[in-house]
Length: 177
Length: 195
Image (cartoon, rainbow over all chains, first blue to last red; front, side, top):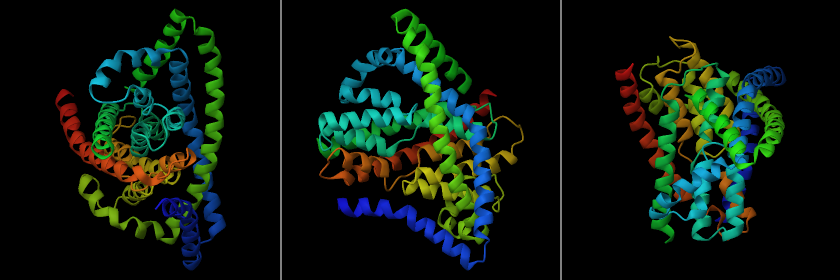
């Protein structure tokens, strides 16, 4: 089971790349010319979105380094504990929508601390595998096309994230407790 | 909204830093974080350039259109306001397909191109349309059949069953996907009434 999934994930991207190239050759596409033209588009877009990436990265980093994140965590702890969520998992819920790198770090450290096959280990893996870095997605996607008024996008996405976390906890309790 | 969140994060960090004596760390952190963003930005630019190059080949050969076909009926139903032959459909479908397979790095370029197409249909430039927001929320709540990142982390931590939480993640994303559709309808209505 394990091996199959690992192998499958490893083969997916190479197979896709090979498929695109072979199909392109078959349809007589000028591969290198189109690739270079597309790559240039990609670079231009990256340049447009970098300032947004920088803004979000600095703000989230400062929020974490100042200790503000810990304070917010302290406020929420009693509420979260009554809902059947282990306290150790709380930082992940707070960081997950903000920073992909920071949440990966939290997941890795919890997997090592509690063991990947413990209840906490399985719960954080489920959350990591079912959620996105919402603030990053919104900032980058809207920033890339120059949309500044996001209207209800953020509250909507964060509400959906919250529903996802609650579902993850419920599913984890049902499957592994 | 994002403006307010950004200001709130920055000002809270600086205030808390001042009050708790962590301000020196915060001050230095601003620049280390900026440098980390630059490293990430260069990596991201490289990966994006590669996938954009590849996706342009797939676009020219017609592969993009055939691969995205299974997702199109659902998307045409969800985005009823767009004309059925709108170029954003194939790109949104590829974005969702890549997300479903856990290929985040492949999903982003398609998503960004889809946003650019949606941006062309904007009636008020600079303001997100209902279609854009629906695409964003579907993107962040996308159904995930193969959470590659989580499986890799579990394997790295020595799990006996690295793919053991994939099924749970799929259930969670399924619930999130349906709630995203329902809540989008609710939020859209509320925003109309208050506007």
